[in-house]
Each structure stands twice: as structure tokens, then as C-alpha cells.
Length: 216
Image 1: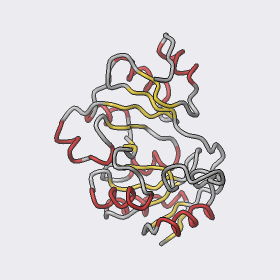
Image 2: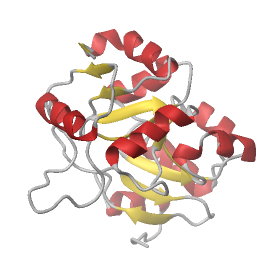
Image 3: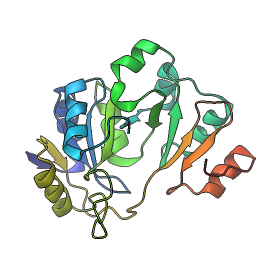
Image 4: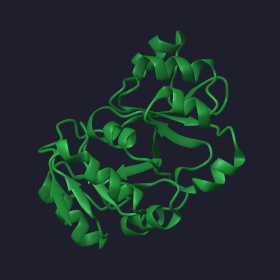
């Protein structure tokens, strides 16, 4: 396992392409990443995190144009993407091609999709394969002392010790300040539905769509 600086992201990208796991910092917390089309690599994340198979990883798109090549964006989905991407918002989007959905089962159908700022977004832009990501923590409620996903390198190493996951590269981003979730909006139907609130506030989603949006 190698710890690198954010300026060495090509190393992380090559590891993803080779079917290895990488951990990167975000504004929110550290994320563990794999090739979204590599079933073994993505599957190892589910196993290590004890994550239910129906709880998808997020598909990190490098640009809105590439997102449109693979996914159907309705009018409201497009408004949200144009307003908040890159950012702390994920959209549940229908695939254009059912074969693509089958090849990327780890990110679900509809796919949980985002265009991330910072190191995670740059990793997606540099990798020659699609990037799937999720938080660096064991899934589920671990009790009242659970602090949630890792926000420091020490917490990353504690997670790896518990999960048993073999990670090739960790990108050192210092302390992740926000310690909060992405907002998730379901855009599978023409009228978007708020699934989970997070750093993008419900009021911001409402303002972007020009109508009241409440959690479903």
C-alpha cells in the first residue's frame, strides 16, 4: 500500500485501471474507489464494508457530456446537474443502454451518479475506466460510538484494519472538513424526488427546480 500526494493522481488512476482499490479524500470524507466495470474489484468493496448488495456505489462521471452518453437526463435532472455539478449532489439516472447497466451492476439501475469536485473528480477524469466510489467505513449502524466515514488518514487505516480490504493507493488529503453526506435526488421519472438531504440543501434543490421538493 502506497500513500501519495494529490499531485500524483496518475498513480491512483493506473491502480484503478489495473483492478486495484484506491482511497481518496473529498470535502466530505475519504472514499474508496474501484473500476465500476470490474465486478471483482467493486464486489470486494461490498464484502469489506459489509454493504448490502442493493445499496449501490456511486458512479463518478468526469463530465456532463460523458454522463449524457451513458444516461438519460430529463429536464429536471439536467437543471440539477447544470446547477450543482461538480458538487455534493448525486442523481439516480436511467441508463441509455441495458448492456451498460449489466456491465456496471455495482452502481445500480438506475445508477447513482455524480460529478465530483476535487481529487475524486480528477481521478475520474484521468482514469481510462469508469470510477465507482463509496465512503470509507463499515456499512450500517455500528452503535452510538460510530463516528461515520473516515475523515483522517488514521481513521482510514482503522477502517482498513477492520474491513480487511487490500488497497493499493491512498491519496493523502489531510482532514476532510464537512463530514456530511451528498444529497441524493431520484431522477428516474420526469419529476425529480428528493431521496436524502445532505450538503446540498432541500431549499437549494427547490430553488433550482422552481417547485417545492420534499423528501420522498
